[in-house]
Image (tube, rainbow, N blue to C red):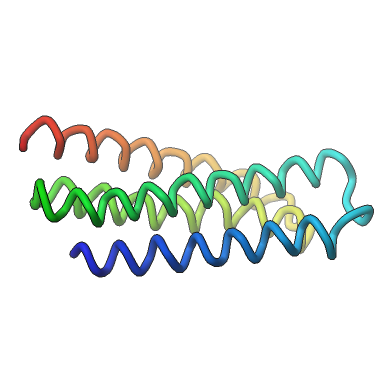
Amino acid sequence: MERTFAVAGAALAFAGVALGAFGAHALQGRLTPADAATYETAVRYQMYHALALLFVAWAATRWPGAALAVAGWSFVVGTVVFSGSLYLVVLAGTRWMGAVTPLGGVAFLVGWVALAWAALRS
Protein backbone atom coordinates (compact mmCIF):
# COMPACT_ATOMS: atom_id res chain seq x y z
CA MET A 1 0.00 0.00 0.00
CA GLU A 2 2.76 2.45 0.85
CA ARG A 3 4.37 2.05 -2.57
CA THR A 4 1.05 2.62 -4.37
CA PHE A 5 0.37 5.85 -2.50
CA ALA A 6 3.98 7.05 -2.78
CA VAL A 7 3.88 6.59 -6.55
CA ALA A 8 0.44 8.21 -6.81
CA GLY A 9 1.58 11.14 -4.67
CA ALA A 10 4.75 11.64 -6.69
CA ALA A 11 2.84 11.40 -9.99
CA LEU A 12 0.20 13.89 -8.86
CA ALA A 13 2.89 16.26 -7.56
CA PHE A 14 4.74 16.02 -10.89
CA ALA A 15 1.52 16.73 -12.77
CA GLY A 16 0.74 19.60 -10.39
CA VAL A 17 4.09 21.25 -11.08
CA ALA A 18 3.66 20.74 -14.83
CA LEU A 19 0.09 22.08 -14.80
CA GLY A 20 1.14 25.00 -12.63
CA ALA A 21 3.92 25.90 -15.05
CA PHE A 22 1.52 25.52 -17.98
CA GLY A 23 -0.92 27.86 -16.27
CA ALA A 24 1.75 30.40 -15.41
CA HIS A 25 3.28 30.49 -18.89
CA ALA A 26 1.00 29.16 -21.63
CA LEU A 27 -2.24 30.47 -20.15
CA GLN A 28 -0.90 33.81 -18.93
CA GLY A 29 -3.09 36.59 -20.28
CA ARG A 30 -5.50 34.13 -21.91
CA LEU A 31 -7.75 33.53 -18.91
CA THR A 32 -10.16 35.82 -17.17
CA PRO A 33 -9.08 36.66 -13.62
CA ALA A 34 -11.85 34.37 -12.31
CA ASP A 35 -10.71 31.46 -14.50
CA ALA A 36 -7.07 32.04 -13.51
CA ALA A 37 -8.08 31.89 -9.85
CA THR A 38 -10.06 28.69 -10.47
CA TYR A 39 -7.10 27.11 -12.26
CA GLU A 40 -4.77 28.11 -9.42
CA THR A 41 -7.16 26.54 -6.90
CA ALA A 42 -7.09 23.28 -8.87
CA VAL A 43 -3.29 23.22 -8.90
CA ARG A 44 -3.02 24.16 -5.22
CA TYR A 45 -5.41 21.46 -4.01
CA GLN A 46 -3.74 18.92 -6.26
CA MET A 47 -0.38 19.70 -4.67
CA TYR A 48 -1.77 19.65 -1.13
CA HIS A 49 -3.22 16.21 -1.68
CA ALA A 50 -0.21 14.87 -3.56
CA LEU A 51 1.78 15.69 -0.44
CA ALA A 52 -0.95 14.14 1.70
CA LEU A 53 -0.58 10.93 -0.33
CA LEU A 54 3.15 10.89 0.37
CA PHE A 55 2.31 11.25 4.05
CA VAL A 56 -0.19 8.38 3.80
CA ALA A 57 2.55 6.24 2.24
CA TRP A 58 4.85 7.04 5.15
CA ALA A 59 2.06 6.53 7.71
CA ALA A 60 1.31 3.09 6.26
CA THR A 61 4.72 1.95 7.49
CA ARG A 62 3.75 2.97 11.04
CA TRP A 63 -0.04 2.55 11.26
CA PRO A 64 -1.08 -0.06 8.70
CA GLY A 65 -4.77 -0.67 8.29
CA ALA A 66 -7.89 -0.10 6.31
CA ALA A 67 -8.33 3.50 7.43
CA LEU A 68 -5.13 4.50 5.65
CA ALA A 69 -6.27 2.78 2.48
CA VAL A 70 -9.51 4.76 2.69
CA ALA A 71 -7.52 7.96 3.25
CA GLY A 72 -5.20 7.34 0.32
CA TRP A 73 -7.89 6.37 -2.17
CA SER A 74 -10.06 9.27 -1.00
CA PHE A 75 -7.20 11.66 -1.72
CA VAL A 76 -6.69 10.13 -5.17
CA VAL A 77 -10.39 10.27 -6.04
CA GLY A 78 -10.73 13.73 -4.52
CA THR A 79 -7.85 15.05 -6.60
CA VAL A 80 -9.18 13.59 -9.84
CA VAL A 81 -12.72 14.84 -9.22
CA PHE A 82 -12.00 18.19 -7.53
CA SER A 83 -8.98 19.39 -9.46
CA GLY A 84 -9.93 17.55 -12.64
CA SER A 85 -13.37 19.15 -12.77
CA LEU A 86 -11.87 22.61 -12.23
CA TYR A 87 -9.34 22.05 -15.02
CA LEU A 88 -12.21 21.07 -17.31
CA VAL A 89 -14.23 24.14 -16.32
CA VAL A 90 -11.33 26.42 -17.22
CA LEU A 91 -9.68 24.63 -20.16
CA ALA A 92 -12.68 23.04 -21.89
CA GLY A 93 -15.32 25.55 -20.90
CA THR A 94 -17.53 22.83 -19.44
CA ARG A 95 -19.07 25.03 -16.77
CA TRP A 96 -21.48 22.28 -15.68
CA MET A 97 -18.47 20.35 -14.31
CA GLY A 98 -18.40 22.90 -11.50
CA ALA A 99 -21.36 21.00 -10.04
CA VAL A 100 -19.15 17.90 -9.71
CA THR A 101 -16.35 19.71 -7.87
CA PRO A 102 -17.92 19.47 -4.38
CA LEU A 103 -17.92 15.67 -4.67
CA GLY A 104 -14.14 15.85 -4.85
CA GLY A 105 -14.18 18.10 -1.79
CA VAL A 106 -16.20 15.51 0.09
CA ALA A 107 -13.66 12.86 -0.88
CA PHE A 108 -10.89 15.09 0.51
CA LEU A 109 -12.80 15.43 3.79
CA VAL A 110 -13.31 11.66 4.01
CA GLY A 111 -9.59 11.22 3.43
CA TRP A 112 -8.62 13.60 6.23
CA VAL A 113 -11.05 11.98 8.67
CA ALA A 114 -9.76 8.52 7.74
CA LEU A 115 -6.17 9.68 8.21
CA ALA A 116 -7.00 11.07 11.65
CA TRP A 117 -8.80 7.83 12.53
CA ALA A 118 -5.76 5.79 11.49
CA ALA A 119 -3.52 7.93 13.68
CA LEU A 120 -5.88 7.68 16.66
CA ARG A 121 -6.19 3.93 16.37
CA SER A 122 -2.46 3.29 16.13
